[in-house]
Image (cartoon, rainbow, N blue to C red):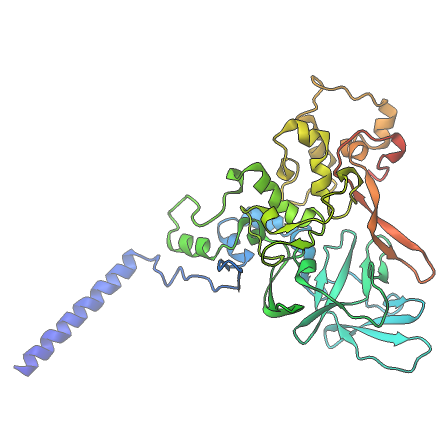
Amino acid sequence: MNKKRLLYSLMILLAVLCAAVVYHCKNPNMASDYQSPDAIATHLSGEQFAGSESCMECHSDIFTTHLETAHFQTSAIANAENIKGSFTEGSNVLDLKDVRFTMKIEQDSFFQHVNIKNRAVEFPPSKFDIVIGSGVRGQTYLTWDGDGLFQLQPSYHTASDGWINSPGYPTHNIKRPINDACLKCHLTVATNLNSSKRNTYNKEKMLYGVDCERCHRPSLKHVAYHRENPEVPEAKFMLNISELPKQQRLDICAQCHSGLREVTLRGSPFSFLAGENLDDYSQNMETQTSNSSLDVHGNQYGLLTSSKCFQEAGTIDCSTCHDPHKNQRGQTAFFNQKCMACHNTATVECKVESHKMESVANNCIACHMPSFPSKVMTAQVGKDSLETSFFIRTHLIAIYEEEQWDQSK
């Protein structure tokens, strides 16, 4: 009797196993094949980040072109590929009035060595840990001291292809802490460890560059769902930016391009999520300042919104002219087409003489959005030189005098 029961039990078990094998063969898209991605970081709202590489699975074209944008390249781990400053002898020194910095490679890592002139005090070298800046105009560098993040004094200046004193850096003996108000425009997310020490972070919970999830919100739920349901065409658990009200679309860009926004009303600089109202989280101390007098660095939003084009067209936002998924820098014909979409020959006539138009390569923005020196973004290129300004294109679209035109095109 016991033998019969044992045989019967074995037959049932074999049948279950056979059924499982058949099911697996007919249904290859099992949960094991579509495992949910691990959360790289968690937003203060509780939403979780999957990392932009997960976007490549379905959006490879957009992902590939986005890698070439200044947004994506605005921060990275410091290594030979990402650091633009030279560590070659003869080009690896920043010599200032009272201090000399020498950049050296040691065991595949990059270090800053400090020598204070007329003093015998020795300082330990500081490691290059994080690169800040795409390199279009320059780069600056951050170093870890435990969990604390600080800026190194030497920065790279693209125009001179050399080392300069970091803009606004006070003296050689002050460590400049980097808080999340500084990081928010260069990283997708950074997790602060201590509310009283705003420059301490979880090194393992940082997403470098301004990537997909900064504008489309943390996407772990979205990725997990579509891995398990690849046949569903509609995007689930994902923000559709095109359906947002105009101001909320603008707010996505304004979180970094509307000045320092030093007045925090809610949360931290990383609290805001696309699709929310930015003014609920922070305000700019320059709200009483005329937009026409705003500096060209950092407050492109304020300049754009005071432009006649913006005010009269009614439909313009940042994405009207910029595709955040592509590097469009220097594409004159592309931006001319954007202008001509509204200012075609049937509605407006350019009164500039043809030879003058040729002097700026028939570039609309060279005349109507020229580059101006920043009043706040300056740097000392050499130890005996005066501070020089970075030239940045204004977003105050207007008619400028000929001498103001951007002759750099």
